[in-house]
Amino acid sequence: MNDLHVHTKFSCDSDAEMKEYIESAIHKGMNSIGFTEHVDMNQNDYGYNYYNSSDFFEEFHRLKSLYQEKITILAGIEFGEPHLYPDELDKLVSLPYDYVIGSIHWIGNMFPCQKVREQYSAKEFYSLYWKEVLKTVKHGGFQVLGHMDFPKRYYGEIYYEEAVMNEIFKRLLEQDIVPEINSSSIRKGHHQTMPGKELLQIYEDCGGNYITIGSDAHEVKDLAADNEAAKELSKSLGLQEVIFINRKRVLVNEILS
Image (cartoon, rainbow, N blue to C red):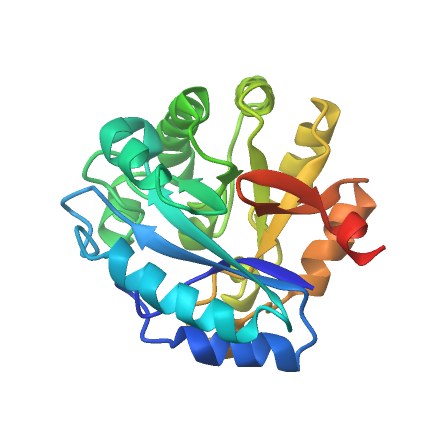
């Protein structure tokens, strides 16, 4: 079992301790855990300028030296809107992260909060959202596309045009980016992961082979939550789970064999 999307106190919206996650992961018999703290450059985000890479790596390396014989511990970041902040992204990816998750949380000054949902229907918001996703996969510079249908978490539904999805996945594959199956939507009351089967089927039809699995945990109790559901979904589509070590994609099955 692997969880490649985990937030700790080094993210603005979590108080969780890295050590507690690691000990919980060992107790669960997990193979790897990846810490992916929020890096938000949009000044509307309350996490703007919160992340401190020096503090993160000091704690990360200290704990990795203590626990690396028991579990694979990976360093990552979740970078919001990578295409809009290329200089800041380049600066961070020069640091020894195993992988970077690129995510779209904001469309300009809009986040899919209640106020925005009152102004924009799900169909209208998704139309704007997919344009940003396409821009960010065209830009690249990261290994994993996080929760690619993110508005579903707030709207509870999804709208897309298959031609647009084909273009997104085409560009994603050209950039050698892997989509994440993010299971956080299930514990928030939805019946699908992000993305769900319909989008992942299009990805597979476009020639996609690989996925990562992440809980998007902000509390230790949510570590690897609904991991099995994500695994079963990937298996049903013939997609292979991977992790990233030193920016290199590694098949989970190869690690376990």
